[in-house]
Length: 152
Image (cartoon, rainbow, N blue to C red):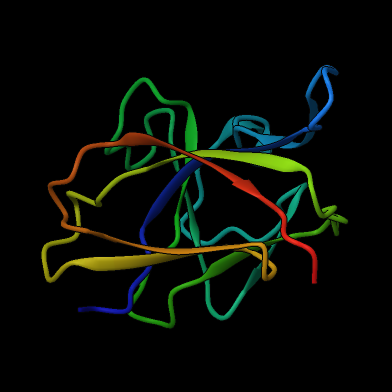
């Protein structure tokens, strides 16, 4: 398995209390307003995210657009053979025991990058962790996970 991270498109995290109440959206990002709506081979000035452990590319809207019609999105593999990047939220969240949270995002392979399968690790502290393995030809797909936070 190759350790190069790949395309991540939109992220959404929200909480649903165990009592009947409207869900609170903790973070939503579609990347469309980043960099004035323009793609970039190396981009690290995200409004909601810090880029760590390498570099990422901002793709879409006609700029190296492997998923036309999906706005701007992030290639976690970046623009070179350097270390792949990772996105870490600038905002810290307190996730409360007994509350169920829903994490939703889109993930797809990178058809412009031939080679072995890539992995993407998604985590929310110790409350949620999952690794996804995608081939280059894997289509963009919405992933939704609902998870309760357990008492420490």
